[in-house]
Amino acid sequence: MGAAVNETLAALRAGDLAGATRLDLSGADLSEVPPEVFALAETLEVLDIGTTRISALPHDFSRLKRLTVLFASGAPFQRLPEALGDCPALSQVGFRGCGIEMIPAEALPPALRWLTLTDNRIETLPAALGERPLLQKLMLAGNRLAALPESLAGAKSLELLRIAANRFEALPGWLVDLPALAWLAWAGNPFDTAIPEAAVPPVAWRDLTVGKALGRGASGDVFEAAWNGRPAALKLFRGTMTSDGLPEREMAACLAAGEHPNLTGALGRIVGHPDGAQGLLMPLLPDGWRVLAGPPSAQSCSRDVYAPDLSLSLDVARRIACDVAAGTARLHARGLSHGDLYAHNVLWDGTTGTAVLSDFGAAAFAPPGEAERWTALDVRAFGLLLGEVLDRVDGDVPAALRDLEAACVQPDSGARPSMDAVLSALS
Image (cartoon, rainbow, N blue to C red; front, top):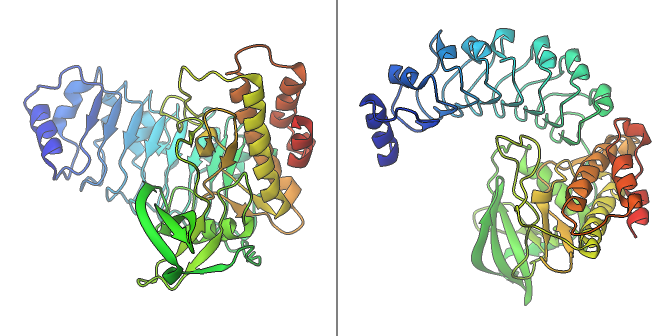
């Protein structure tokens, strides 16, 4: 147990945290929720009890009437606690990697917006899940699900769904009819058998010179590298389940995407790593490039968080949109859905608007003959991003661009334009 959580626990027990709105007990040596937590019942909004030995919640947990966020990932719960269902304000619930097998209907709070159950042992979900009208974000990758409750077909607010690495024999057809759904990950299920020919060559480890670390993502670590003198980025995968799915399916998508000026796709697949690690060689972006926005917050749930001072000219905004559309169109042409088309996965030069689409962690191959049907979800995601970019234009925005945005985000997925048509309209 770290010194910081020791200090927090001591302060809690001494009554020194009166009025606190957040309490982080993650990693503490606890087998139950400390009763002193209830002294914060009038103020506590965020509670983290992850990676503790807590396996159940007190029956009167709902005394925390202002609690909106609960994290318990890595704690040994076998079932989602029924006590959650009585918490009136609870909207974000995270129980990742807990070993959960059961989801009682009574455990689903009425204000539920964001539910993370990644990497558990869940085989079935209750019909009550589709009866939570505020549900926007549902993370179910890495479970044992073969079906979703039919009630979810009425989930009008559901925007993001992760069902990768489960036991689905087919995608539930009604998913594309969900009017708000824009981000869907499904790779690594039994029906996902597509292994297209890689569009890039193998890269021998001995031909690489590895430099400094550039970053650490959910699925792997990225380093600066040189390949026979050519600057590049090297991503080495860790092989663990992510919230989007399996790293090996991310690799397959990158390889299929190949090299494109508006994608951080693969230049080659690493072979001969001394430890047997899996890796990809990717284009190295120039210094100074940055993400277009930050990822969603607890408050925004499924929408990115932009810098408040971001202001774009119309030409720059159009260039960002064109480049993202071009990268997405390339994926769609290869039978791929991106699944995570967000501004936080767009890297741009910060000046002219030159941009690339990154992060293939949620990418998946569409079922044969159904690519256009499922890539319509990416089109809605693009429309949302386009609207966010246009909102930050300093000056008037042509009506034609707002019309394009509206066409992309319309509830009827079958009426949305293809990404090729979007690219033509932008160009």
